[in-house]
Image (cartoon, rainbow, N blue to C red):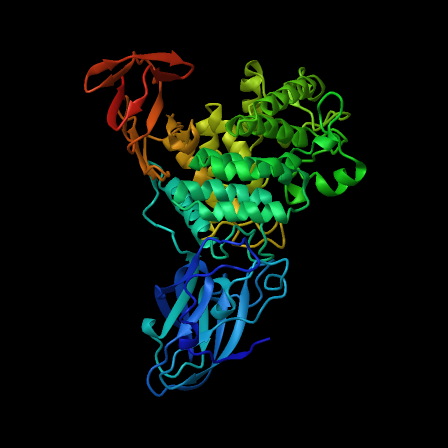
Length: 589
């Protein structure tokens, strides 16, 4: 119900930085940023519509003209309908009406009433009470304003990570649509930092492990902050959620943090607790994990929402669960080595060898060259093959047919699983297919979000696939990390980005350029292939790069300022014999 609000700005001056009591003991600081509307239009007699350009989590400060008095009604909205704020939006799309009283020239804060779903502890991550309630909105409609409303009269107080640097990352390419997709996803990560930890959107405002992992690696690719990922990890270790595969994402998060920062002290403090995330109590004698009936019906998730599973058949030995298990064992072995637990590392590798043998023998269908959904079924969903491909489990001789099958099947998965589908395609030299899926002209692509006017990524491809979807969900922002990692081509090979791999995947693009933030400083990459393949690479001090450049048709080798550079053909790439440091321009001829 609408409510009257009359909160003096002076009472809220302290709302700059905060530590949320519901989050970690030390939380990444978040602040409110004043934003003016980009446009104000009269949409009816006495009614103005203000557009802030993009959605953000926040509320309003109203600065009325001298002598202005009386009651106004403010309609907050994420969606429009017929040129007005949609007052009956679908699903979890946000709308809130609020009445406020103007009193002369005094500023007031206009905020929506609390929503029990996302402002009630202990489940929800709380924002500071002195802020007033925040919600995601792009538009506000104001009724009853005395006279003409101007930009200086209305200010959105938007919440973002205090350390966020809009200039930390960049991406541009020969495909303007792809650039818009990257910007949508980059901004989505920024906008969803409002709570100080990675939450799954406005409907619940709690962290989930899979959401958090995608947010984490996308945050690393778009900003320099590392504290928010750490705080989210620590909270999830104390408050885990229910899906089976989400447990493995904690190993993914810890490994990503270690590779990004190289901070062994942080890892040592958390290593022992990570062991429970391998779910070893569910392992059979052959190393594969088995699921009870209760775990199959409640825990094993495969994809979300359930309608995005491509008909996946759940069995006691689930191919997706076991693909995650095998990947987690491999990563855990690396973490064990890093903290000096060499015997444990070998134990994890031995478990992985045993389980992988059973995985290939029982779950790979050699006649169809696909993975079955599980032991005891011949159904072969997209998911049963996409996760093994992404996790490097497909034997090399079978990679081409698996890639071809996945490419032909298309985006038969959710925005969550798309992270892994596209990773697998990019990693196995199917960049053209991966980019085509991102930009496809149907409603299961980021093109659809962009064309629909989204300014923060959605929880699902469209309302029809998840009727209660929210419009502010960062697990839909996978291109924020995929484009820097694969199209620009920079990924860490050693913890803390001491050594990196630079391997651009051009796909159908003719050029691309961008900046990737790292703890050592920014990496800048620019490449073009109008006449051969040319790349300019700028590395920060203390970093070296193993460089693989596309072996263009008819190319003989790699040159630096017309001087041949020692390189060998490795598959579809020329690999430089020596690591690169500093700044260099390289040509494939």
